[in-house]
Amino acid sequence: MAKIIKFLYNTILFVCLFLHVTYGDRECVTSADCQKKYHGNQHLSKCRYGHCVSYTK
Image 1 (cartoon, rainbow, N blue to C red):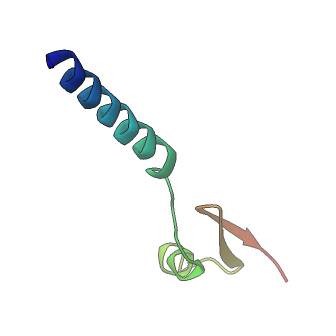
Image 2 (cartoon, rainbow, N blue to C red; image 1 turned 45 degrees about the vertical axis):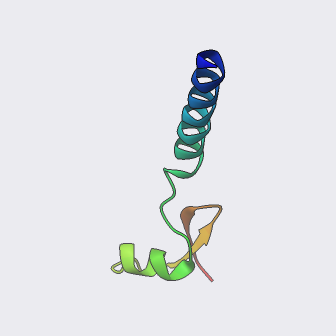
């Protein structure tokens, strides 16, 4: 019984750490987040795959 609980605890801990590493470093969720974060930027900023990307028209 203790081995099962220990296994479940370790599995949950591993999944939480994996999700934090995977999704924890995102700069933005929407393009509006980029506009707020880099408001002095003269180029357009869009959110692509969790990172702000600047480009010109």
